[in-house]
Length: 161
Image (cartoon, rainbow, N blue to C red; front, top):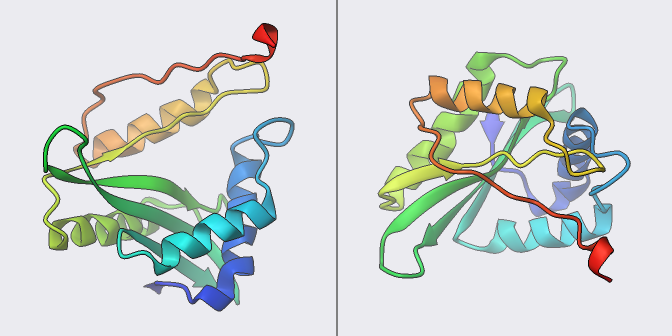
């Protein structure tokens, strides 16, 4: 069952976020900081502009999606953004991913959003693209009718210090 978590379940959400980071290969760089994540997540959970949904299995969260509703800077257009989206590899399937995606999409519609967006920014500790991860995200989002419309760019700033 997909549901909104309670604030007292921050540890469980953080546990699945750690699994997400490990699955993405974020073990040597850009690591998830548990306390920082919980603080940010708690603020999101009490804000009307964000929603978190989880899928629970055997007393643990096995999937989650974090979404936000935003307004463009240059006009009043409201849009939805999928911020984090993960289904644990042991239970990964399109039906569960689609249920999470649809839950967020329906909330965006209820909020009056004109469009939704998602991005995948995944790189290794040398700032090279993780093509496997990016391909998986692109494939899924395209099956949901989303169009690829841009790029992310990243640069290590240590060389300028």
